[in-house]
Length: 440
Image (cartoon, rainbow, N blue to C red; front, side):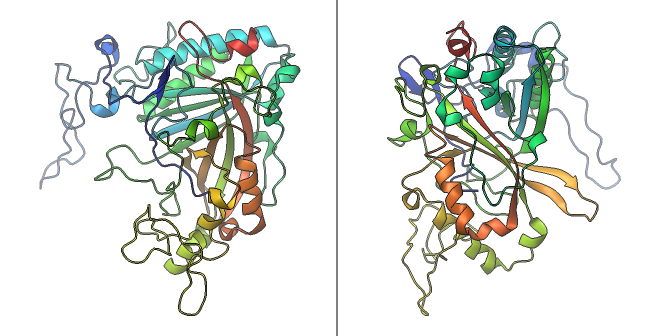
């Protein structure tokens, strides 16, 4: 898990002239069908006084109240890039991969992407999915919902588009830390769903599954979560299930080279990241990384901090001193009184730095997961790792290779599933995602 992970980055929607950073837009009046019946404080009151029946909620007001800020946040479906890449981290996430059904080809795939795109557009605007809407999210707003679509390596052979398969989509190399379950890896099609409301996220997942119809079947599906917006006193970098501040060095859209690192250029030429239909797209590496929490939690605080190279309390580098903050630059050469490196040579934060990997960088936008316990009570929990880059051979692969050779964190994690997907650029008004590939 490179030290660039899930810091919430500013939302970016894009028009013809390039990225735009919107403010906190509120949902339009047209989504009244999904308006909340009140704010979190107005819909109900949990009784806590002596003698009261704790747990009962007051009846909601009969008059519709405005959506809370949590429900009214809306991401745009149409744009230069697909949503869900630079959108701020959401509280709930679903990852799902599909395989095309036997006999389904390019024509069926195009019809499916057309259906999926229209459903995503409607749901992200806070509208019903269509005539078959299940009403699961009837009372909610958009809740920052995003739906993102990608193509796996096998998709191109299934649709007769082998010549359009990007070289950057070649299978990832084997890593020594891999313990991969093939049934939960790869897939013809990949969908990422994120939202700040659990029902809104599930509603989108169910709608996408229904839209698949007979054209595609689910290969695997995973559920994740993050801290809810507003859960902390002020915005901060998220923590993972190991308790570590995780995401300090994530690239940010404001950085001059952000687009070059994360998105395929509009004129990709003959480079590995091409071809032309991938312009303004990105590549997603998806890994299910199990955290061996029982082993991790046996370590002392100092030992945990040495593994990561940062203080657990605030994410500051171990080399920074008592007044250091999370953003203090790490001094890789600093030694203690005995001459030992303050940031150990195998510390995770040292190994994953771009300046230690030929400039390799990626936007990491993961979700935590917890899928219960095994027969011995060991938690099946960890990270649904998702990282975005213009070329995985220059982003994820060199960093993971270096981690494979000597990362102190590797003995406390296990990579259990993997996928690599080409995520085309955003759809313009009147287009569906992938149209330039499927109809080009």
